[in-house]
Image 1: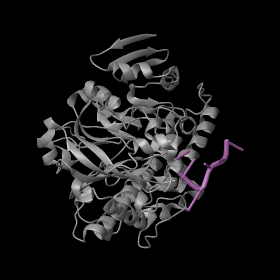
Image 2: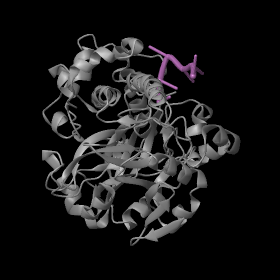
Image 3: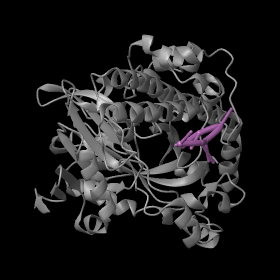
Image 4: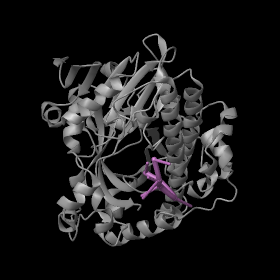
Length: 470
DNA sequence: ATGTAC
């Protein structure tokens, strides 16, 4: 196997079935296990691939590694539910506040915020919202534009997002899995489990980015709310259903891959079209879910700090999807599975509000560590403007529970000190598999991305409160 | 990831 280097932190590996680009610093690159490269090689067996890459947070996933960007031409390419991932539309959202760090340093105030947020945003399995005036079928068809006006505080909530409506052919809704509607309405505006979270953080603006930060309405010491959630059972049901559909149709075509969990079909096939169209319904659910979580968080902040507190959206964007994008003079299907789009200043794909500056790329850390607000660079073109989606898991949930003690977890949350990061759980045991020790060192990941000239850090977000589901 | 489960 031959490995070429293209400048800092950019490797190109010549695998048996095609080339894999890897963006990582030396330390991170050397830490990858062979399994992730074998997995890439299986993915490269899919014909006519235009680009396949790993960001530094890459780790083994089902069929395809988390941290993959994979591109095909819309004309003769492939679509893969395995390279979208099971949590379709999973993504990040940040809201700013006028508050300063010192306003919530008091633990009593922070505990009041946790209690208030939990009143509006269900965080436990099987706890639901009850927005009687929301029609869930309008939401999955029209995204944010399918929500009643009363849940849209102002126009800005519709413009500072990757897309307010993901357009698709609604006729395909006839092919929805039968059980998908069952819990959908009650799950809109709920957090979900696993790595999903709501964090209250304060900002440290990067020295060289004061001007851009000010343009985005950010200031040093500012309190912001970061939300990580997805399309809940709606996307999971679609993912499951189409895994079955694709496996059957691949069998009937006689298509073989060493990994039975790696499923794909031509974009132009009936199965490919059905999946692509319905995937967009999950993206509409996901962005609306994060919107409604944010709406609940805003209500909670208003209960604590007064009814006129404004919480503008900074941005909402996803890291699990396949989008049709125009690159290299043709329409391409860009899969991002645990990879974040980071468009540079002036790029035509930017939403109008961020055309001039490039949009905020929102990168979560692990619990108890920093998160980052970044901005893409022109050089990102070499990776179709994809950067990391977070720290990336370093070990499985099971292995984490065996390795890390609750005490070690508590220490990393600074429990008992003035700077303790407060959590909504009585015991850390419940969420031990989400401790920072389960993840790679996020600073190494960010260093890899910055060093590869894919993006720059605008602000570091330091956690003060972490709200997790189960 | 998912009121998980060929």
